[in-house]
Length: 457
Image (cartoon, rainbow, N blue to C red; front, side):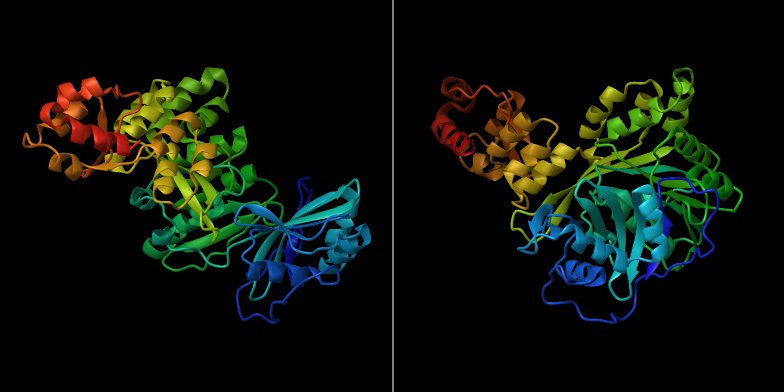
């Protein structure tokens, strides 16, 4: 139950069998209650799905290992021998895949099990024998409201033309986020969607839209070939699984400029780096023109990370959102990419947010640990300070104020407090927290105000 092989080496011709199965349907077998070296590849993968694992690792002289909620976990007490791994892999995969793997030492493909979905599998030869790694592809596309994405992201699916980029490190859920946005278009627009993927992971079922899914080395020889062909196939929406080289980025930008809506992914960690990566992929003499093109065609950037929940029940995403407003477009056009973060900070009202602010919110809601937030922040020291300070209800200060509300305003004006919401403030970073200074501001109520401030840090 496998799709055809996808291999790094570019083939001279495509396989004759280019169709595959979705992995949907009623399971033909129950999940095993436990596994060991005698189980088949399918049984191991089914067990992994049952245990909510995201990845499976089989390697010589190592136990069977699952990645669960971001952490590797040994599933079997005993190690697999080189022969165990070779037997599991060679009996679980079609002979033509094993033959190509034996010749090249590496192979990547999508394995499907009816009722248990699709698995992106990589196999390789290494010092001790064979290794297999399988990524579990989600069975269903989540609903937008269940993802935690800011509502501003849904508006990115409503453009007639332009470019939307979803970015982040490997394994952060970019494919799922991309699928959520494509599925929103599929459900709400009467358009032709063409996806170019390596490999096809999530299989879409056409609803309001017509969907054409193409896999590199199975349905087309290269990403560039597929993008060029797509422009002649009456597309409204182009979905590119990964923009990784100059040719694909050039074609994506050109497609966005010529009236198509393009969605793509990149392995960048924030919005500013994403824009720099796109611009820097072009020759230096073309970059001024490219900045103009991107300022006009880029609609938004969604950067994300997946973080283990504090209660150990799963993973939760943190997002950085850039919406290309006129001020942002002006920064891109003039090459002031370093000021993008300031633009995001001052534009939260229209749905923008920095990654560090997302991490701060998740930590303060007690959904992730403070240690995780600091470790993943661009400025760990600043994040630590933000998480130490507790928010203060404005009403608490006003209750201690006998001057009808002037103390709160004065504390903000003199840089002691900063607003975090319509109802809360916090001690500002690097604020002058000296008791004599607070007495000058709070006067007769200084003792009560000083106590409130001290309790918040």
